[in-house]
Image (cartoon, rainbow, N blue to C red; front, side):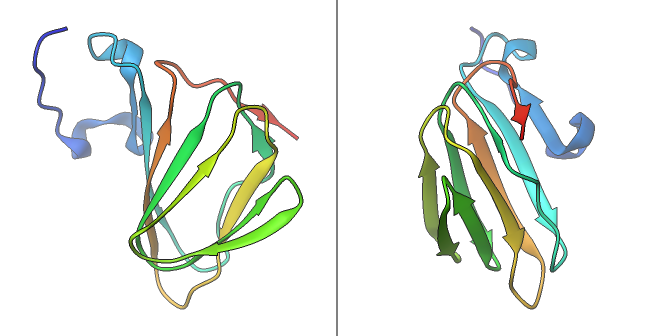
Length: 108
């Protein structure tokens, strides 16, 4: 794989698919959510790593509620139902790392 620099504002839907960028082994989603927003419960066949940059997220991971704030990282194991909601007062900004070169999501 050759070195690449990718401008985030040129990524469709604020996400990078590793397979489309030289076969990188991860996919990224850049989250910028208003209070109350977030994805419904779902799962993947691989780990998903959430890096909270700003705001507060409340995760529901396999039935357990977890609150994460700035500079905290949540690692969800493969095949584990999860989702999150912005439960803070302002924007929730995260980088969500899918440990796979392509997205594979099963919505529950």
